[in-house]
Length: 232
Image (cartoon, rainbow, N blue to C red; front, side):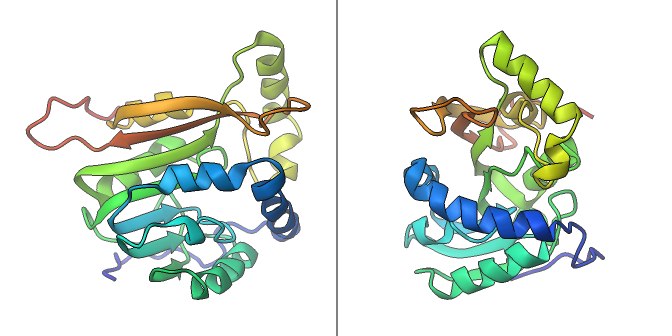
């Protein structure tokens, strides 16, 4: 793996209490909320070298196809990174778990065939810079697979999300924001969204502020394409 020379502290993100809660909750949600099936769909058909930004406790690792030659998994939070390292040992493909932040990925330009963000853009400190970094490390034509929380369609829930995001929700959930517009941010970063669909997590039952999600595929345009330039 070719690393970029960046000086990112190993604990640039530190949420030990939330990390322990998330580690337990996410494992249960894979089954009870149907997230495992979403992970499988998110990663289906990938091949080559992949960078996963914000790998958490590594729940995606078991869903990567064998056509993937290597996954470089970036995780800034120490507790989650340690769990991801354990998960990497049981993955069916080579996985290298690396400390770093989405805003300063410690890898070289244009060295990956695909990138994956899975419930990550809701928590990063700077969405635009994070997507710019992902675009930088993808080869032209490379894919960005995304599964993210989004703003709810109905006005009442969207208003609730905005209130939560401005008050206690990010403090309790490791920086999560429920109402960010992931698709608009991805397009503004210069990616072409090729397909996407809205999903609800969980599919039935009580609707939560985090229930509205989007699952999709975007691509970094090649030099020969008229792709939209990223916003500065």
